[in-house]
Image (tube, rainbow, N blue to C red; front, side, top):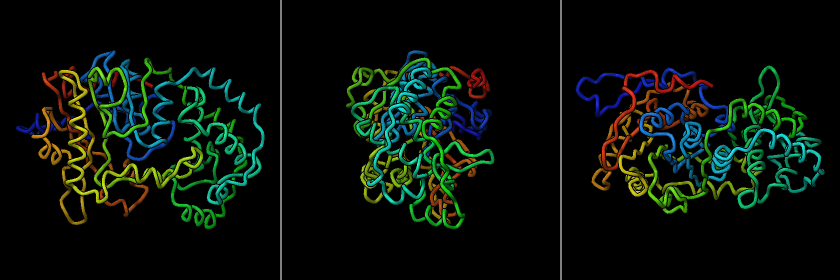
Length: 417
């Protein structure tokens, strides 16, 4: 990855390799890989900006939190992380990471669930779910957990929430040479391809369902997640619409005490988060079509509609940020076949700068190899994905100072996992 503060380096076009460029691909706390998630950024990216612009005790908010990468990095760094997302799966993952219980409590609860287990009826299990899991052990245990935590959004302990979130990460995936830590037949990847695709994949490859114990597999997953110490601070997670995040009843938001907003808004072409997580969402008791409908920006996903949407988010950032507070938006370039890619971050700023009192600090250009983009799973049909993400950096009031030189490699180097 190579990054440029384009506005700050306009004269000499000097390229700067930021700290996250030097970190190993899987750098980060052991809680990060709890579950795969579409359109996620590496943890080193938000951590770089957190270290550059904030101090211990400051509050960092992500209104599109996804699997909770930015707010988790905030908590690990001794800040207070707040995550907001309208996707129930994202909310579950973020809330579990930001209020993780002790390992001892989680392991004890897993054994309690094992002892309390009573085989449930499988009569309501959809055919597309039945084709994935062993019917004697694995599927009944999954249905038992599904029934046990059916009211998880309203009534669940931190311990049970962490167990349920950990289960999301092993619902399905691809086997490796040493076997599987997943519960399903060997899947093409960790995202849910369509039921028809999966059915043909099973038939073509002659796959058989592995007979695995759900409680054993959750225990193994949890032990991996707790490889590192728990985050230094706890955070907050909300199942809410990002368009209204400034109205959330949180003391830091109400008191306009947010030092940084760090987020990756949905791209111009919105990913169907429900469709690509239909297996996990079945266990959570969620309506997949409703989720995809709720997460769309507008009916046409037009450029004008996207700019208006971003203007709303930026205006809310202005509302909640402290003086010298910073808002960072990770926005990928978009392209149509045969046309020059649109530098969407720059375009958004040019269109919204008259509609906000926030100021431009700079735009970071982040070159990401296409093999590392999540959209690689669609191969040639990946559409508008490009190799470049840009990070639009705005600030409120007094211009903040950088704590480290732009050319410093030490921002993240002091942290090891």
